[in-house]
Image (tube, rainbow, N blue to C red; front, top):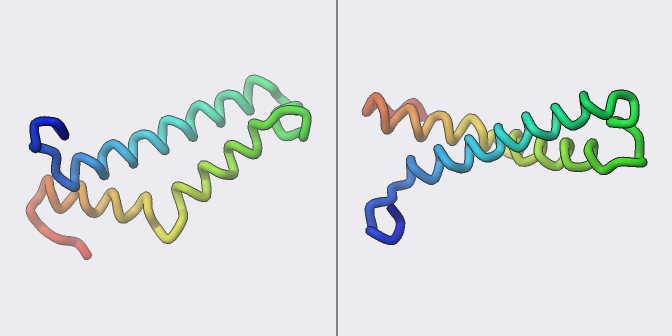
Length: 79
């Protein structure tokens, strides 16, 4: 889409929002698989999880992407 010049801001928001959500799910699953070691310093899972949580919540980024996608779908700006 980008190469064809058809990408719009809501497409970017969908990609960013989904990528962070999927990465969080993978990190949480990894932490669960490792059990108690998942929260220990021996494995970097918690560091990744904390970094991803900050990406999701930093200044409401996750919510802003949701609002952008919602405005695109409904045609109503919610912000």
